[in-house]
Image: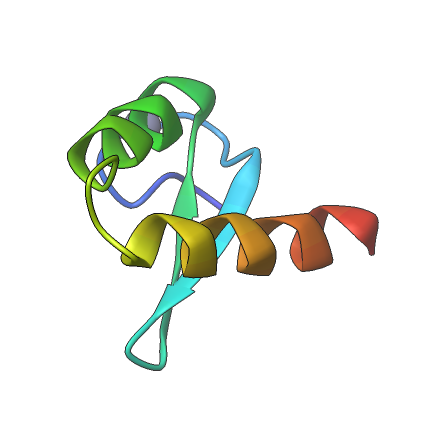
Length: 54
Ligand SMILES: [Zn+2]
């Protein structure tokens, strides 16, 4: 899977509103920062942990 925002290989897969997207390390960190004050961060983190465990 490729990162949703650039051509790097995705290291995380996050599902938001039913849409699954890949994120590279850099863009994952940017998303985390964007969501830092939002409940969405917790959902993103939970989903990411599930995907990385596979
Ligand atoms: Zn990226």
